[in-house]
Amino acid sequence: MQNKPLTYIDLFAGCGGLSLGLHNAGWKGLFAIEKSPFAFETLEHNLILKKKHFSWPDWLAQSAHNINDILKNHTDNLINLRGKVDMITGGPPCQGFSTAGKRNEEDNRNKLINSYIRFVQLVQPKILFFENVKGFTLEFDKNSTRGKKYSDHVISKLQQLGYDIEAELINFSEYGIPQKRCRFILVGVRNDIVSDNGIEAKAFFDLIKKNREKFLINKGLNVSVPLEEAISDLLFSNGTIRRGDHKNFKFGIYSGISSKYQAFLRKDSSSDCVSPDSHRFANHSPSIVNRFEFILLNAPKGKSLNHDFKVVHKIKKHTLIPLNGEEQAPTITTLPDDYIHYSEARILTVREYARIQSFPDSYEICGKYTTGGKARVLEVPRYTQIGNAIPPLFGEQSGLILKKLLA
Image (cartoon, rainbow, N blue to C red):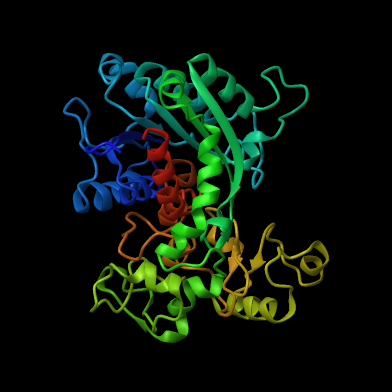
């Protein structure tokens, strides 16, 4: 293994879930590109200011950026990075491909795939790590003139750029994450690296599956983690406190640690910390609390309320899932009011979201908690940042295997 840390650039970095995982795996970031000022503030606070993880270049302002602005204004700087970048990571925003919402081939966010490919073409890193929703592999309208699958388009373009490509759907619940989250993972290895090292891109998937149990055992973790083991120390019934900056809300306090997963994610928190970051409870009206209590008592847990139940009880919400504490959570989205806590009549807090995504409690989330109306298109509040993230625990496992491809 090389003595100096391997380097990477994180595209569409969000609040830093993948970068945190790569940091823990021993990688060194050069810079990250993230359009949202909210998400970038979280990444900057935790990974730039606290962990000094990035070696930010002088030619790029340390702030939120649109990738297309970088491509337009810094073409020469990107070309000059050739030979200095081991990996490019990250996948374009997934909303246009997601099966959780309206799949729209014309969604402008889908065009960011071409920006990603152009960035790779300019920098020519040794390896690639690309993540997106599982809907990325599905067909769009059969009358489409653009082709049936964006995954096929990306694979073809990257192969044309000289990369050996392999892609699979991976369920993060099989890697110690308390969530049934299936994602499209693509790994690319530049053809000259394949020739020199004899390791193809498909080796990533073989190695990460082979290594997961050993990795998690070394962390003191189980492969399968139910929701209750992830968040049972964060109950409202533990008690609450008020904070001056959010005096109209109640914040939860810790109870004792009752699982390996809780111990792992709390290990870097201050010993005198009473209330974890971003553990703010929603102010539900009495009618909402009563409805949630009724649902918890009468509806099957772990499944979205069926049509008949909603009709009988006059529930108009499209998706509402009373969670099951004995199972892994379903894929959490950016909409916290889609879920009811498994044992309390409330939605989850941002910190509970972060736990489900394997963020340590020491990772502080910045910006607004929620947003609505027209601002939904422009702003990325705390719930959205976490809901869109790559779980750091999976990022770390990936980072360790990606290093082996360059050994």
